[in-house]
Length: 89
Image 1 (tube, rainbow, N blue to C red):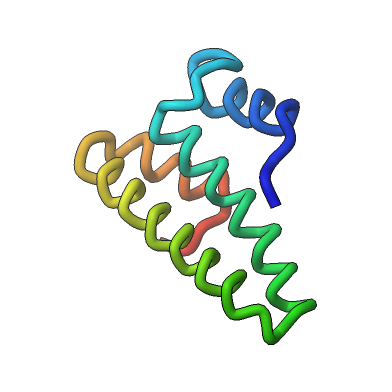
Image 2: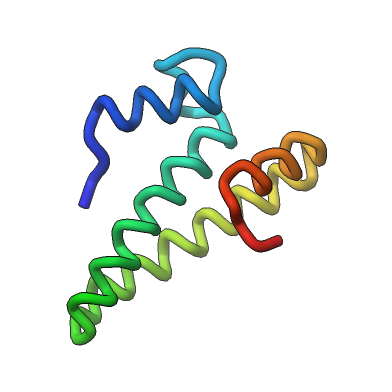
């Protein structure tokens, strides 16, 4: 379920300073969002996969914590990222 190297670099180039900037909060949120989307589709197909569902919930919680941090530190960036990723907040 991991993202491919080219997907990671394209998301890092889009949301970060360069294509190797994977540590920025914006890039981490974008990467988690993509992983959450793929795991959501997996859980829709395999309804009895409890470990997959647990992993999905862990990723959602991690993304929520990083979003909360970003909201405290960079409110304008937070609002633009939410709009661009299409998250409900």
